[in-house]
Image (cartoon, rainbow, N blue to C red):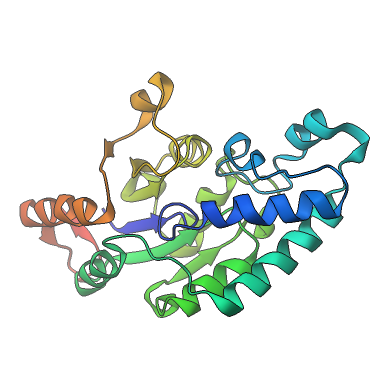
Length: 230
């Protein structure tokens, strides 16, 4: 194990609930009504990758560019007034992995401006060697491209990496890329298909830290002090 790759929304930050409000706002602005419920229909997906779902729901009334515009407007204003809500155990997990010289990355379906803003606001941007957002790939989650690109930039093989995710689309993306998916549920509990592909499941990031502690205890640092082997 040489790297740990983090999803963002619902995994590091309790931001999915904010998206309910943002899409209610954006939906009313573009004339489709409150659309916050679409969060559950598109968990883990970028707006671009979920286009067919939106069109199926709203037909010709759906306008992707306007949805993006008003979503960004709401989120920008919201986070000027509110701190990004950090998930339990995030800081201790990042510090632990950093102290063990593990390569760290973010692979998020959210746009780059949002990912970087949240990481900086939470004071954790410097922990990550690589940050890959949904607008940096052609096909975001559940396709494997975002994880393959992240591993390529980290210069590690996917099977040397753990991927921390909360949604089915994110877990499928990591699994299809060849990473080891670990689930930390947020709004959604795993179905049978998901249970079959995940490496492990934990209730919060503190339990993930306990898992990695036990893993590192069994294995020795590699010759470069980067990751572990055994």
